[in-house]
Length: 194
Image (cartoon, rainbow, N blue to C red; front, side, top):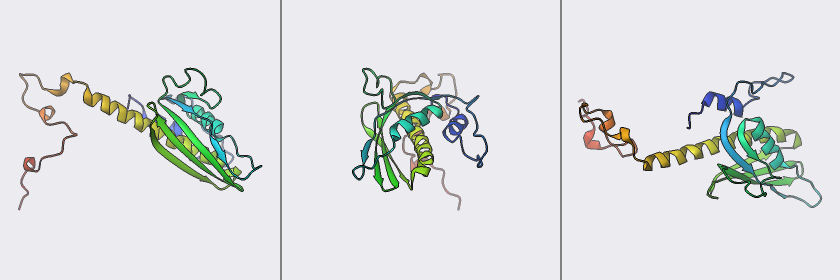
């Protein structure tokens, strides 16, 4: 996946894992930047009249920045000219408030505008919102990284490869076998021992 160090990515995504109450959270010092560019659109809000919902889009954008995402365009800046240029994806969502409880429904759009992933987080009350945003941010980053990996696979599958055929003087090798994406042939399997 574009040479990413998964250990660093996981440490970026889950910075509070294993931190006991009262302990200082770990810092991002020495961790790799996550090579993603994401936009976070303002969230739609639903609920009873007069009941305010927190600005989850702004909280999520701030969390993605804290987690080390290379470029985050927040809800206040996403509508500006050229704001979506070069983004890997855009996060769109809805906050539904029912009393103290909230439902966060988030969808990830790829750079072509297609919705490729949906994430739902049920929040028991305001005290659980920060943890829910941390979890959503982690799932969004993982989803966006997988989206990028799939995109790279599609590009590399269509690009010609010089290494696909062995040199003329070399003996046949595994590289000369059909691509991994091809279905294995039953006839090519060695016979089972009786």
